[in-house]
Each structure stands twice: as structure tokens, then as C-alpha cells.
Length: 306
Image 1: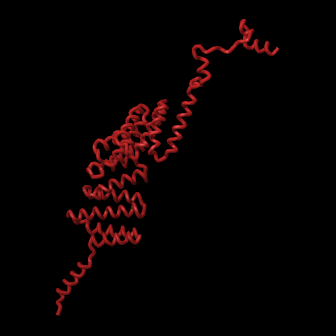
Image 2: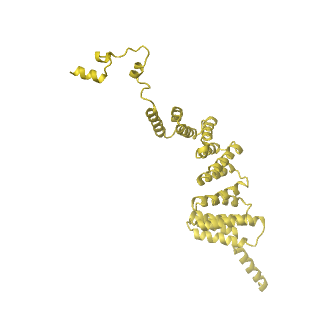
Image 3: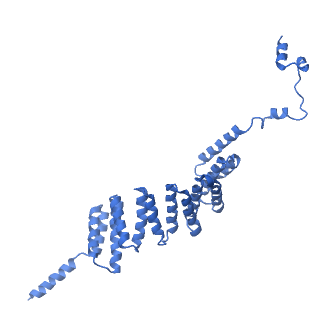
């Protein structure tokens, strides 16, 4: 016969075995996302956070970061609720600052602030915070910082940030992108046009196989043309034609430069008749008798007409 105490113990054991864990809620949240039910997913992520609230163990901290990242992603990717996404990602960074999820949250926040709220300074702050943790993608993040400065119109800072990419991360795949961006930033500053030309030249010299090399030549040609060096510009554009993805645009630049040269070249240059008329020893055209005694050509014409 089962005693009352034994029955109670069994009931407690059964209840505890039926109690859902944070892991259970993670799985249910994942299933809800798969079934296109974001609200249910949020419910399970919050339930997981409630279970973990009073647990200070390292394992619980990791799970808390995972739950907050999951909730933030639901707001961002599924519901497109940017304000709630920003709030949850910031909660993640505050509660679990050293987690890999917090690092990822900085990068995601930078994207949201830049593209959805046009908060470029805020985006730079988030990217800088991510770079401070020295992640594997530091070169790319530094390049992104330089791009945001370009958007801000702070071309001097853009050039400085871009130069860090190819000086600190020499083997990065973003080296040519950063070199091109730096040259573009320099070209936007009137007093740095010569530096921009050298920067474009450096890219084409150091990385001739880069996809950006023909674009760099194109931009270099434009700088030469702006400086009035049309012949040099044409020679550079001819080089760019070999690999440029839009040869028609490059050819149009060449044609415009040739027209400018034609408009600014004196007509007597290259004129065979004019050239021979000024050659030493060239026999002058025969004069009429009236011209020979000092009369004008007009008088001679009237006399001939009479």
C-alpha cells in the first residue's frame, strides 16, 4: 500500500520531470520560426530568459546571450521591428558584454542604425566597439567604418581609416577596396587631388589583377583630364579599356577628351596650306599690275572688273 508521503514525493518528482527547461524553450522557439510564427518564438525566448534569470552560472550566461540574440533576430529579421530589435540587441550587449553574441550584436546594430535610421555616428560607434574586441573580421569592420565616414562627407577621416586596412591587415581581401576608397576620398578634397592621383596609381601598380584596377585607371584619367592633361588622360583610359566592365563609358570619356583637344588646338596647326604659306622661300602669289605699283587688292579687283 502506497503511503501518503510516498504519493506526494512521486507527485513532486512527476511535476519536476514535466517542467520545461530553457533548452526546451530554445527548441520550441526554433520550431516556431520554422513554422513562420515569430510571436510564438518570442514567447519561448522570453520564457527561457525567465528560467535563467536567477542563475548566475557561466552556462546560464551563455544561454541568456543566446536567448537575447534569438529574440533580437526575430524582431529584426522576421517582424522587421527595428526599434524593438535595437532595444533587445542593446540589452544583450549590456547583460552579456563579453559573449560572441554581443560582438555580433554590435555589427547588426551598426547595420540597422546606418541603413534604417541614418544614424551614421551611432553606426561608427558600434563598429568601433566591435573592432575593440579584435575579432577575425577586423579588417572588414575597419573598412566599413571608412565607408561610413565617406557617407558623412568626412573625407579626411575616411582616408585615415581606409589606410589602416592596408597597413594593419596587409593580407586581407579588403586591401584593394580600402586603397580605392582612400583614393576616392582624397579626390573629393580639392587640395588633395595630386595625392588622389598617386593613390590611384599605387593601386594599379601594386594590385594590377584586382577588379578595381581598371576602375582606378578610369578615375585617374578623370583627374588628369580635370587638370588639363588631356593626352595623358586618353592614354590612361586606353589602358582601362582592356578590362573595364563598362568600356562604352570609358570610350565616351576618350571621345570627349579628343573633342576638347580639337576645340582648343589652333586651326593653323596641322593645316598643310597654312604651313606651306609660311615656309621660307615660298614664292608669293603673282600680283596684278595695279598692286605692283602700290594699289590695293580691292582696287585691282575693280580694275579687272572694268
